[in-house]
Figure 1 (cartoon, rainbow, N blue to C red):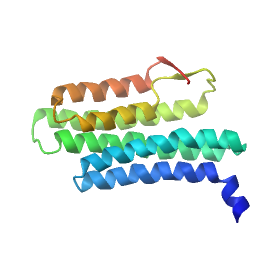
Figure 2 (figure 1 turned 135 degrees about the vertical axis):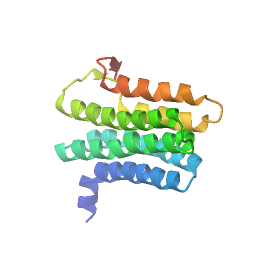
Figure 3 (figure 1 turned 180 degrees about the vertical axis):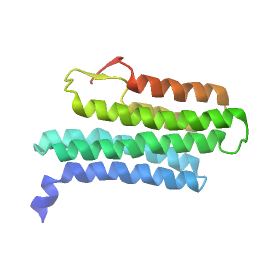
Length: 174
């Protein structure tokens, strides 16, 4: 049993990423936006750990890579998009709210495309496009300051992050 856990420890960490992303969605549904944003930040911490642990323990695998992408889509694509839409635009029945729905969905789609592209490319020195983890973390930070940021600015940020995820912009790996 201990051997099985050791061999899959990085995947367990990845599943905690998914757990926190899912908690973020549930907190958003309950209107607990601060907890939702914190959950996304905790998912970022788990995401930063799982790859390191896999390399350190020599347990990296194709399964782990695919699992990581699926979890990342929930935690850094769906969760932040729902959080920002609900927190900032969800109570408005206006043109900007309708545009925000399109922007939120576009953000998720671009995140999925970015993750798929990452899985088929073999870039060792840089990321092509802004990583979805970074975009999701920025969306969580925006949530904390959403009361003082105009809705139109938040809408532009969402669309910019969506575009940057699928762009050919090279982001150095740290």
